[in-house]
Length: 320
Image 1 (tube, rainbow, N blue to C red):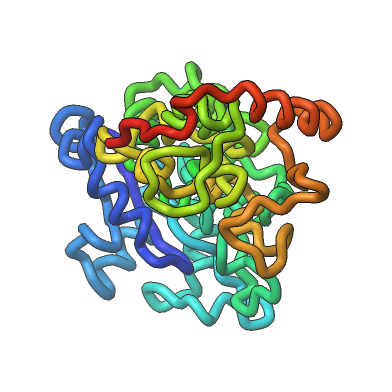
Image 2: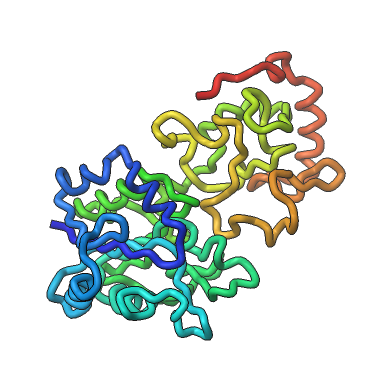
């Protein structure tokens, strides 16, 4: 039996909603097939008031083994570091989190807010929000750079706004079945099995990207979304086009640009103030290019690619 406790800080519940839509495996499969016991979840738990506090204190005191602590949402420290803006079960949530993280075998941060602070941590950040072990790309966060759970691992980050449901459920299965040693975390503590490739991998518009055949309208069945609509697929680590959403689609397949929501800089307003859905360019060359691409080479490639683009580059592509 694997005990899971899921808490929610400063959040919109988006990752809970995503998790409850998991299909491979489903939330019910986790319990029925993998022996997981949900001690409490903000949308699934029945306990309230003193009954809930008893569960939390029993975990802290070691009366109930806490195998996996899942946290969704930011750690709210306002006002003035007290955390009183986010009280839960008669205490600031950050106090519960601090105590529970010390006794948990594994700590999993789900969604952008829990991993790097997300939208609430954008300047001026009045809620004094931070992620569990990162604030944007800076390691540290609420628990500190040197934090390790009882298993010896740092916080396992599953970013996204929201995170893909199967990323969540599959990592829980890996932990519950004792195979976490097979998972390598990257420098941002993300499981490489989901985040070692770019979102562009598997995109149905890659041939249009290569020939610089662009579209400037949302929802179109043809054209690359990078040049005129600011798609961040070439710079974003995720498996959204390999592990499809609802098993059938993704943003780019639906004609919407990737927003880069698995990266610490999301939503990128600090990098491009006042701009959304637009690739910023200088003399026709994007300010930010895919990794490994030089600006001079890109400019030459653009002229050549457009000159040799085949007729089908302006035709519709099949999208699900």
